[in-house]
Image: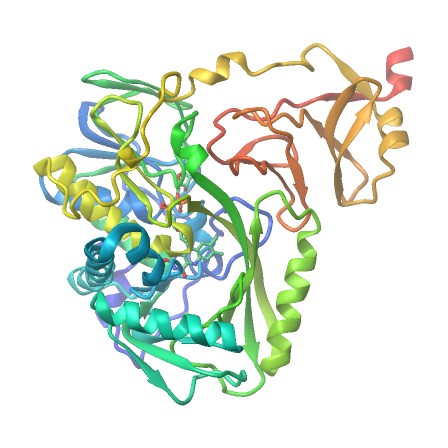
Length: 537
Ligand SMILES: Cc1cc2nc3c(=O)[nH]c(=O)nc-3n(C[C@H](O)[C@H](O)[C@H](O)COP(=O)(O)OP(=O)(O)OC[C@H]3O[C@@H](n4cnc5c(N)ncnc54)[C@H](O)[C@@H]3O)c2cc1C
């Protein structure tokens, strides 16, 4: 057995599913709580006392991409370090729904059109290998992450969708993803036509990542949590500055979901938010399989057993980050959709999270454009990032170790040509305008201009200054400079996750301006608030 977390697995049989005693919850980049957060305590690395040599590979980000890659490289003899700003699975891996697919959001009709039949066949092979990698790891490390091999069902509800579905069926079969038409689907939703694709998967992503992290450490790898990388000086040996100590490495991988700093990839990846609700049902009509309608945005449904309890997980209501301030409405719409088709006993969890949609429909995995040859990235996964994280891990392992692409360079980020001026990491931070430094604002004046309700956030203007203002439940005001520290777009309030979200590149900040999600790597500037009375004193 590979760690204390999994030690009970020695006694594990399908009949015996122990209930974890959660001592503390992992944190996530939002205020709402995901189902996965309830299933594990924060990961505890073996030791914080380790040698600090020149590492072979430094991997920034402790989500599913970073940890999977770290284990593959460490097993192959590389000395690796994973540096995570918060705790493992703090990012989207802690807010995902963890469907494992070869049937993808970007249909094979589009992939074949844009990358040719050969390209689409590579995608189908790569995603198959991704699911196989997960299954192989689960077997090798005896991980109880409630994995299930299952089918995906895609159904149409009008003429246009039916015509699209037929094309998807054809394209799937042409590239080796076997699809068949079926007469019934596992949920009681009216439909015209439906296809089934077998050999897909579902699991608890956080438990999977924890077990891999433990195996990585057992193989001699190092994990550092609560440590944000703040700068990286590219050279043959890269110097990595962090909020704790500095590290050196021959190779650097940004497994941060989106790379920090300013890079062409930020212009090619659009941030989206997706909403998820987990419910307990009154009856036992928990559907098998992974089920999708064909609306845009589409709904996705599946059942997951967590610690012996069944949950129906439904997601959807996606929109571009920052474009919808009343995000509670998205939850209400999703809830109403669920109640239309299911007998809901109780809503156990609701959360939203972020993904990055690539401009041409395929992820960017490989050398980071505009940097030296020893800096790599994996991003632009869209809504299939759990699957693509495994593709990234396999591809980057081969590129780093063998210097060859497993997937014929199909995912190479360099398919976007770098232009002058777009170089690496955090150089932009120096010219972020600190327009509020040295200023203070009177609380009373802000109340006057904003008339905020408790728990409301708004960008308000006071005389010549604009500021992002949030009033908490107790009436306390929190003010920050609304200019995103990444590229100075103005942030907007996300009511359900209680965060300031940037619509341009998806950076997100807490009510007090702390970075929650990159690419920004510098906090929003906090604005000092004082009462007028205080000033007169
Ligand atoms: C609601 C929702 C549902 C989804 N469902 C599915 C699904 O069913 N199937 C599927 O395949 N995909 C799904 N996805 C997509 C998938 O979950 C993500 O693409 C995937 O989890 C990304 O993993 P990652 O490890 O690359 O990034 P993350 O999990 O976001 O991890 C990145 C980590 O990097 C850390 N980090 C960032 N900056 C720094 C820094 N400067 N220093 C140190 N650490 C840093 C962060 O703290 C974070 O922990 C879904 C996405 C959403 C939003």
